[in-house]
Image 1 (cartoon, helix red, strand yellow):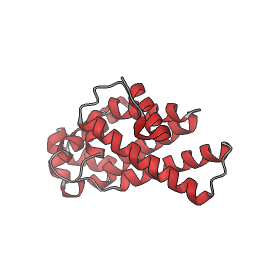
Image 2 (image 1 turned 60 degrees about the horizontal axis):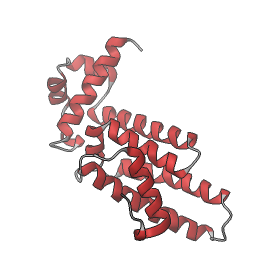
Image 3 (image 1 turned 90 degrees about the vertical axis):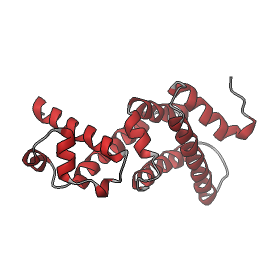
Length: 181
């Protein structure tokens, strides 16, 4: 991709993130986005047909990255670590993802991917759980993990991703009796 196009798209993404701190994506107009990004409207429309399309391309890119990383992970801790690193490397986006104003669409997509990962992992393990119980275990661990990640993001992500991943994995496996240093 041409470096100018890449830079323009990055400027638009950054401007969108800044605007999304104050309002939902549906309320952001192309004009205010272009003004914030210091990009001409014609330039914007040469890449995207709407602000929603820009947001969707960002979301798709994030989802694809998470999905690829999950598929490459050999262990559950490794998969959680990958997600934690992505959140820490993209702090503005992380805050937007866990924003109460943002639709839950992105979280639903992450839930589906993570559930697929969990179900594949549980099928490879020897256990006597029915598929229904496996679904419940997966849902429980995903929702709890999402809540822990949200707390970590809201508190400034001070701990290292590896440490948070270990914590989430241990608490998922052992419950609240887990003590960390």
